[in-house]
Length: 172
Image 1 (cartoon, one colour):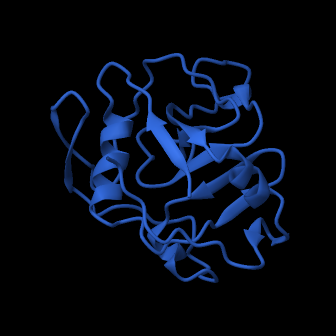
Image 2 (cartoon, rainbow, N blue to C red):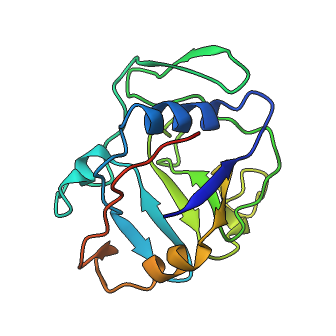
């Protein structure tokens, strides 16, 4: 079990999106589909309910679905199920932080996120050394050892050989 906290930013659209998906059961039964030692563990693709799906890493929430930001603002995901980029708070991709995964294109983050196991400052939206822009929206508070253990499992093409499934994800 992991205990995480969301990090408040101006609007908290990333956190609100995550909370909505978690509390709706969206993440239940999904496997980690990308695990890279000394880098990160990625999770949240609905196609990864099948641990061997070739589509794992390509899915997201329902297009045009609604959710609420942490400040109570009603928001809507776009036609691809993605949310607007939230590039406001200068929170770095430090070990244990949860960060929005995206394709590198604007407004391409949806349900997928990753947990950093190293300080990946080159992924910070405000670090201009690379074009990567991955906003941090949470942090592991307890059991980071488990996150580290997950990052060290044997993989094939970054996918864990022995599937690692999240049974249930909820935000209180």
